[in-house]
Image (cartoon, rainbow, N blue to C red):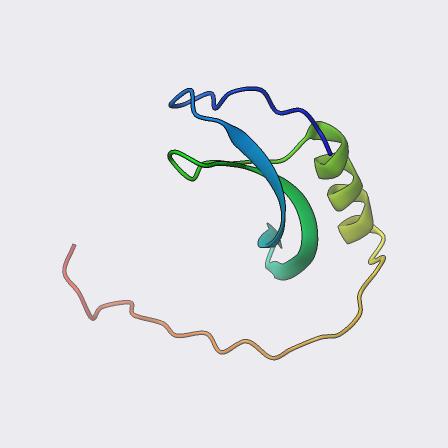
Length: 83
């Protein structure tokens, strides 16, 4: 377990949990499971250590550790709402 210190945003305590996160690279979306993530118990902000982030980048680049692929529907709302 990594020591995260206090939350940068609110000063709350940070605990480490295993999380599922999404990662986008160019037009590709990856879903990463079991990522060690620091989570503030006060505000919910999430933190990932530099070495974990570097490993993720390398694994995505090399297409390592892919265990399955899924189909993701994409919805386009262009022109539906005025902004």
